[in-house]
Image (cartoon, rainbow, N blue to C red; front, top):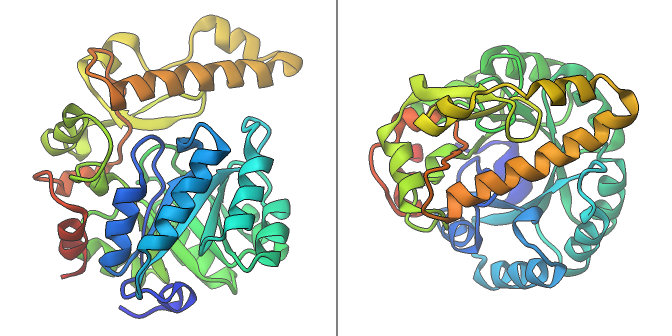
Length: 315
């Protein structure tokens, strides 16, 4: 399973443990590195820059040959911490950064100056071409089987398209829950895969047992789209609570979204409310369960250590 991704990050297997809001943590990524894959954490999982800096130091201390670690940055205006987070990452150092939801231009320039690789989330060819021109080291092809915020094209359609049109490596994100899925993505032209949802039900994940058990109990047919978290369609498990609150934005949000001067603020407020609800569901015992996951939980049958999940994905 040696590919361009394993060469870029010096990995044993072409797998990135995807960055998941409130789920990914140092323990998960440390075990991922020991298992021969890369791990990534959203910088927003840390409330302060000092906490982010401490996480980087802990990961550097636990890094082993054949593994790598990185962080995900939201690079648009909704993330007011972005500049500080990027500065800390460049000061302390990491193997790679994954950018999402905005132009990666500034990130690529600063990260490359610090010797850090930059991979960019993309959902179509137009944006993929743009990040390639900006100097991205790889494109993360977010397809319509991804958990959380997903793309519109199927894994085969998006990966085939980008691998033929780009000169940089394509990493497929979405729809991977077993080794056969990885083999399938590589056959489409991917140089690696980004895998998230199967790792939610890991021993090391810092979420409630209820969240982990939900990933075991529910399957692909139980994943639906909702606009109630961030204002942008996002995949969640169709729990009774999600059914109760509905999946569409409220009428007043829809009305305000039509006003160009207010749209940005409405989205920021919705994002803040949605993230708080997601945090409560992930971190607290609560009936208000909004559990983000993708259809690849179909292959999740028990809660396992990260190393055993990696083994299932690679053997």
